[in-house]
Length: 141
Image 1 (cartoon, rainbow, N blue to C red):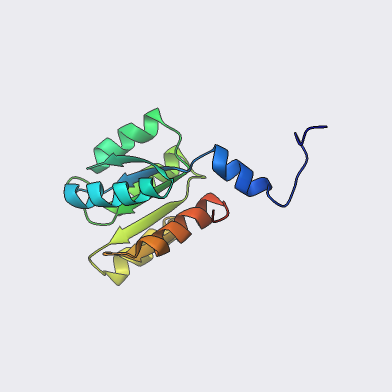
Image 2: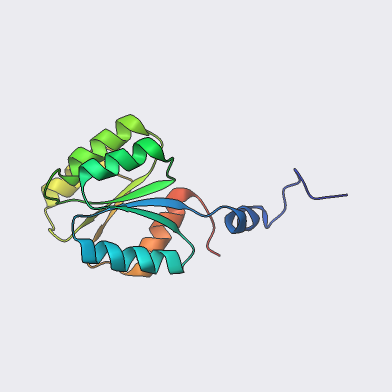
C-alpha cells in the first residue's frame, strides 16, 4: 500500500520538498534585488525578480506566484499602486511590503489595501523567510 492520498504528520513537509515557494521580488534597487534573491534561493525559494512595478505586472501576467515581496518606494510606480494592481490580478496572493522609508501613513495604506505584512529594510533574512513561509502556508523545513 502506498501513501498516496493519506495524510500523515509529514504531509506539509513532503509537499514542501516537492514544491518550492514561487516568489516575485520587486524592488528598483538592483543590487538589493540581486543580494536578497540569492539569499532566498539558497534557502530553497524559487525567486523571480522585477526591477520596476511595470516589469512586476508583466511577470505576474506570465507566472502564478505563491507570494510577492514589494518595495514601497520605487521610481516608476509606488509599491501601494503595485499592491493594488496585484490584488486585482491575483486576489489570493499574499503580498509583503518592504520599506526603507518608514512612512507610517504609507504602511497603513498598504495594510488596508490588502498587504499580508510588512518589513523594514534592511530586513533580517530569517524574519523575511518566516513571513514568506507563513504567508505561503508551509511549514519550516
